[in-house]
Image 1: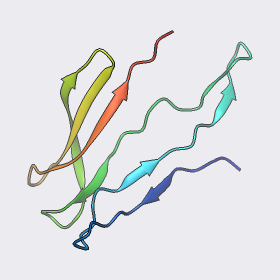
Image 2: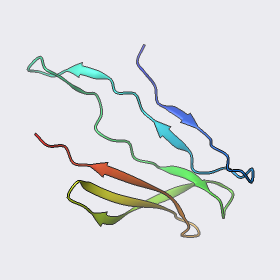
Image 3: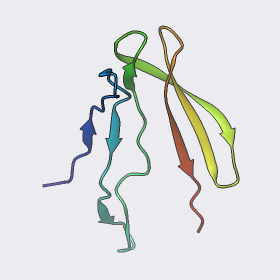
Image 4: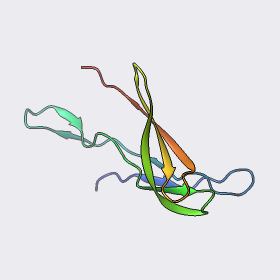
Amino acid sequence: MHPRPCCTNEESSTGQKNVVTVSAMHNRIPNRTGRQEDAYQDFEATELYCPRCRQAVPVRKRLLLILSSGEIYDYTCIYCGTSVGEKTTTRRTG
């Protein structure tokens, strides 16, 4: 059985739901040379909870900032344009 991502709904102190977060488990598989590597590289959000629309909605990913250590992206609701989350990626060296 392969590890599956775990999805959780977090609630704020006011009782409203925040962005759905996804935590992933790394699954290592051998490549053609016999070395172990990650089974996936990255997750992309397709739908997140929008507090203005009060439901899970499709999102657009927009690059906000490029840093020497990686990039910061913003996820916005496609209906109302509200920012519903952000993602920070790190550059791998090697």
